[in-house]
Amino acid sequence: MGIGLETKSATDATNLSALLSEDEQSVLNAIRSNPKITQKQLQEATGITLRTIKRLLPRLQEKEKVEG
Image (cartoon, rainbow, N blue to C red):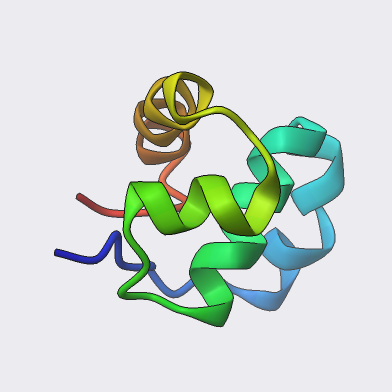
């Protein structure tokens, strides 16, 4: 099952770097490139450990950047 993205306004996109860590930005960019990406594929695409990805995804959900 993929991660999925919620659509955000252009204003949110311009504030993205101010609101997210570098790892969160990397994960979010990979999800934008492939909304059906798996956690394992995120690891391979970003070079971030699977454990960190599993920790980041709930943070991104809280920030309403991705949906579960």
